[in-house]
Length: 244
Image (tube, rainbow, N blue to C red; front, side, top):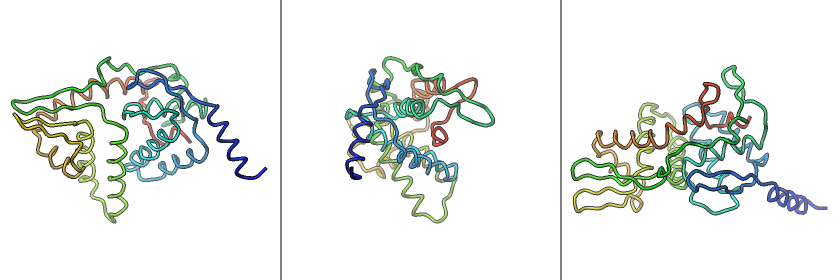
């Protein structure tokens, strides 16, 4: 039996040994291939970077794994990533996670669902005077585009201004949610603009309007995610440490 035959057989096994994961944005289960050793190795690379960048690297790698391992072609949302990561981790090992001298039982999340409101993944509006923003949970594909852009900037720069980079990350996180802007009779679909032009637009929005948007994001997404990821009083971070 040659190497191609072996690889073909392993690929067949991976397709048979699937994980069924409940996807919040779809409100149904989707089948995924489990992690391979090669994919685990890629994830672990993200864990040896400096702390401020390893989340970006992990997200870029894991976004690719989701696309590779999903047995369906779906427009996944950013919020789906964390439940997929937890499911993959529980398939990978049942051992507790060593975190800050504590043993965290990740298995306890196996049958737990995030308590998102029923309309969490619908478009929503925030407005102030004649200015309105239509927003929604961001697609994983947009998150990947922005994450790769940020990583590219890091790799090209010899000296990163950490403060400036963090503030830029904040703007990027906001623009991921914004679909369009309406000012009186003017409607602008942000998806047809470059990422650079979207940044210019978002940076000119009133801080009070962004506060409204952030409050909505916290109530609809961040708070339920934090509750889901809190185990025995410790909030988990979705990063490479899950897969060590």
